[in-house]
Image 1: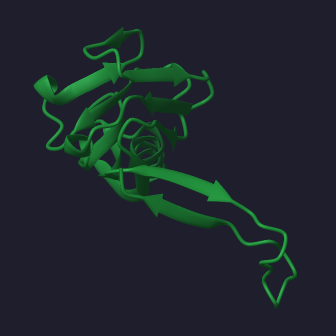
Image 2: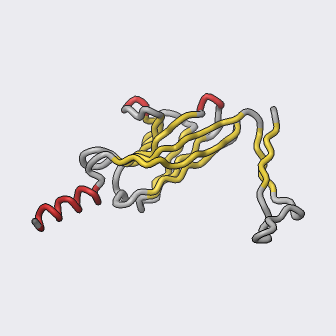
Image 3: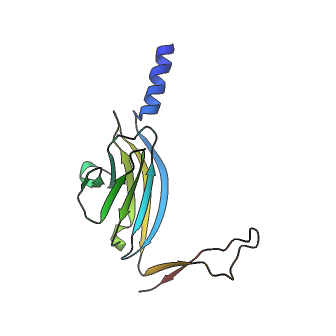
Length: 146
């Protein structure tokens, strides 16, 4: 029984088996850039990658040490966390992407939903707009048609 328990724990911790989480929604503006942060346990030395849905081998846009597109950059921090920066955003970039970590068995994934809008987005925090409950300044996003 102890052996079965040990094997079950190893399977869960190693990522053996498919794991996909419903992750993050990110908004960007045409011509701008976004950075996606992906964090995984037990993945410090595993190969990381970023792909477009459905995330077949041919859908991988960038991985640790390799990129098929200069607009996509992956930075692996070596502690299970990595970031993917997408530059020169296009409206056609909108869609579902996946952060992935290569594992023994099946890889683990986190869903990223990217929405790119036309125009430019500015974020500002005017002094006169505060949250009446906390007193903190609110951030306001203004979308300008371009």
